[in-house]
Structure formats: structure tokens, C-alpha cells
Amino acid sequence: MRRVWTVLAALAAVAAPAWPATAQAAPAAPATVIIVLDTSGSMRGARGETALEAAGEYLGALPPDVPAGLVTFSGGATLVVPPTVDRKRLAAALGTRWNATRSPLYDAVALAAQTIDQLPGTRRLLILSDGDDTGSSRTPDAVASQLARSRVTADLVALDHRTTTGGRDRIVRATGGRVLEPADVAARAAELASTPAPVVTPPAVWPLRLGLASLGLAALGVLAVVLRRVGSRRRPRWQAALDRYGQAPQLAAAADEHAARHPAPSMLVRLGDRLLGARGRRERLATQLDLAGMPLRPAEWLLVRIGICTGFGLLAVLVSASWPGALAGVAAGWLAGRQYLRFRIARRRGAFADQLPDTLQLVVGALKAGFSLPQALSSVVREDTQPIAGEFARALATTRLGTSAEDALDRTAERMRSKDFAWVVMAIRIQRQVGGNLSELLQTTVHTMRERSQLRRHVKGLTAEGRLSAYVLIGLPVLLALWMFVSRRAYLAPLYSTGAGWVMIIGAVGCVSAGWFWMSRLSKVEV
Image (tube, rainbow, N blue to C red):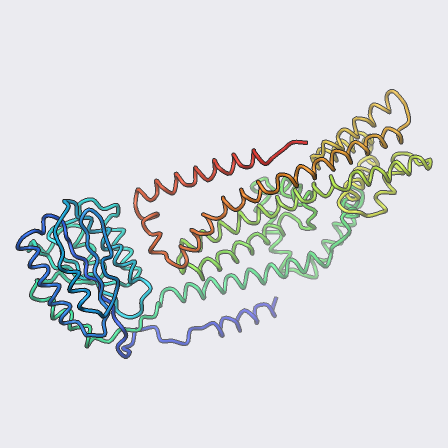
């Protein structure tokens, strides 16, 4: 543990930021401007002429190397001219006609912010409108949050001569912009030629990342110690099953001796035991770990899951740089640990089913050679083919404690959820009651099981295309949404920042779930 903490301290020293915590002036960086012009019917007349004159003065005062674009809104938001230094093209686009009655101002501002979201330098919007929003799908708070995240400044030319107009004013204040008179737009545009762009360092994000990175490294160190401890006492699975029933005192003594040599991990394990014991989950989790074939105690698996959660949380912080992202990563790590355990259990049960015909054939050979059923099962255990050897070893250990062989094998069939083996046990019970040749009975059963296994594989091959189509169709929208959230978050912002967006998300989740259920039922054939 001392070496682990030394390595963590060294990594923390290397990861310390080498930049100052305050913003410093730098040489002038490129700037980009988008003019957001209201072209609804209410602008017809003197207000529209004033707006066009103010836009012309603003473009005339801009430095020639500053790109400018134009977004209009009347009935809908439209990107008329993307950012360009061609002033003639912009001047031609400003010769517009007033139409429609709706003015979706918030949609237009969001479109303009999305257009310049990834561009370097200073980013500024000039909003020319004579009223507030009518007909947008977005809320002003959502648009203000989008502009604040993208560090876009919005200035407003209030043509209705009011400095406070509800949602417009909230957007301007949230982005640090100004409410301008038409005569002041030229001076505002000239500021872009003389104001240096500040180099902004996020003082709140990198300490968060470094702190969670340190926690992640500490958790991974604890996980490595636990795994090392587990590896030092790893035993064959079937022998561990025998020890659990017949040699528990010796195993407990070995565990106590190891705990005395490694006090720190034992302390963590004891703490995990108390937490699991308080919730009554220790026995159930121990059964699941045994079914998965994982040589871990419940408390040790709890520590492993904590390490997984920390790793996922660290990855989420590095991607999102936010506390909600860290919590989502921790939740994903906890679910990933549970799914991994279920996957191990399902894989072990599948391996048991695949090995069952060959194992029964070995039992048939031993019975023909004159062995009894327990002796034939012991020969299977000596072959040590996992997982079936471990399960038969458990059944034999149970019979030594007084349980009948049929009941012990029936419990094995229930643990492995194997219908084939349950039928085998039923055949053994009937043979014990009515008599007959057990080897011939098992031989017939083995032949039937192999035929069913061959048919099952054939059906699985025929349904492979349908199952692959289900995986692709279900995973594609999820992965695409994650990629867009990381690369172009502003594009997806309306989905989780508006009421209509949440309705669409809920509807999409419902449709995807229904599609998954339907396609899984179509591609699943019982044999």
C-alpha cells in the first residue's frame, strides 16, 4: 500500500496544471459575427428600414477580415448567408422582403449560435427585432444556456425602443451583451478591431478532473490490491466447492492467516461484509458469484464494482467535465458490473449445457465398465473439465453429507437451469424405481440431447441475420446520439432543454424498446 500511495502522489504531481488560474490578454484572435434579422410582417415600414440601415452600418464598421453571416426568421429560422468576408453577398442578402406573421426569435438565435459554435476567437450575434418571440420551439432560458456554454455574446437592437422585453433581455444579460440603439451599432462593431480576445482557462473544470482522477487512481490501486489478494489464494473451482462443504475450518484458517499478513485489504473487505450484511445481500451475492465461477467473496466483488464505477466516472468527467456527467458515469459503471456478472453466469450455464452430452457419454462408459453412478461421477470430476466438473463435485460433496444422489443432481440442474439435465435426473429416478439398464437409458438420452443441440445450432445460424439486424438498429441511434452529444452538443441541446424535446426522447425510447422486444421475439425460436 505504501508503494501505491507513492505512485499516486507522483501521478498527481505530474498531472498538476502548468497554466495560471486567471485570464491573460493575448494577441487579437479571429472573430465571427452573425446578424439575426427579423423579417416578419411587423417589420414592414419604418422599423424594417431602420433595421436594414443599422445592419449596413454594422457591416461597414466591421474589420474586413472578420467573417459575417445572416440568419433571418419569419415563420421559421433560415441561415441565408454562412459566415463570409464577402460584403457584397451580405449586402445583396439584406435586400429582403417582409412576410409571414410569426417571428421565432429563439429558434433563429439558436441556429446562429450553432453555426458559429466551433469557430475560434470572439463570437458575436447582432439581433434586429421589433418584438419578442412568437412561435419558437425553444425557451429563452434554453437558448441563453446554449449561448453561455458556447461563449457567444448576443447584442440586441431594440427597434421598439424598450430595453426590457422579456426573453430577449434574459438572453442578452446571460451572454454579457448589450441593448443598443441603432446609432450605436457602428461603435459596437469597431470594438472587434481593437479588443484582444481573452485566453480563458477553466479554473473550475480542471481541478474537478484532477480530483476525480486522483480518486480514480486510488480506487484502481485498491482494486489491484484486492485482485492480488484473490490471486494469491486462487484454488481449482471444484476443489473450492468441496472445501466449502467439507473443509470449511481449514479454509477459514487459511483466510485468517492471509488477513493477518495483509491487514489493509482485510479491513476493507470486513467493511464491505458489514455493508452487505446490513442489507441482507451477502448470501444472494455469494450464490451469484459462485454461479459465475468467480473466486471472489461478496465484499471483494463490492470493492471491484466500486473500482469499476470510479473508472467509468473518471471517463465521463474527462468527456463531459461536469458533475452530472460524473454521476451518470458512476451509475453506468454500477450497471456494467451487474451486467458483467449476469453475462458470466449465462456463459457458465451455456458451457455446462454444451459439455453435458460428452460428459454423460463418459458416465455411460464408466457404467458399462462396472462403476456405480457415484464412481462414474467421480471420474468426471477427476477430468476437471469446467464448469461441469465443479458442479458434479458439489453434488458429490452434498451426497457425502447425507443427501441422495438424485436430489443432489436435481439441485445441480436447478442451479444451471438445464432442462436437459433435469430430464436426465428424472430418468435416473425412474430407473431406480422400476429397474433397468442405466447405461442404455443414458445412451439414448445422450443421443436425443445431441440431436436437439444440433437443431439448436442450426436455428441459431438461421436467425443470426435477424439478431444482428436488431443489434444494429437498436444500437445505431444510441451510439449516434452519444457521438453527437460529445462532438456537437449544441445540435442536440433542444432535445434535453425543451419540453417538446423531452417528449420526443420519451417517445423514441418507447419505440426503440418496443422494436427491440418485437425483433427479439421474432428471432427467438424455442427448441
